[in-house]
Length: 155
Ligand SMILES: [Mg+2]
Image: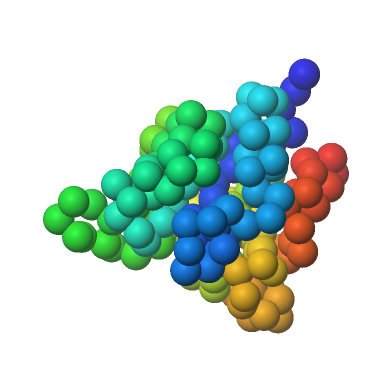
């Protein structure tokens, strides 16, 4: 079976989780599991520390699904979302993203970082940012539910 996407990059807070919590956003655990089962390489790119991100993924039972987890370093250094997305892609062994590689995020910064790396900016409505804000930041689409991602893979 051909993977529906070359790879997928996820923001953490407000995208994989309910904003400000470590609880999974409805539908994301199933989505991540299904993408992984289909052989899609997955990465997390977050402004949280990498250690915290790994722990959250552990708690969600999703850690093994992710090949790369990029976040703030142990020294607290954070060079912006753009930089962590680049690090996440390197973690996947991607120097140049294949066309149709989506990045899901709930913030304008996620959309900008996706564009900077040639990823398809996909906004998620469950993080709380207005869809209009995400579209203005470059989102090609704003998902109301994680399952809507599959439509992009089919097109
Ligand atoms: Mg977020």
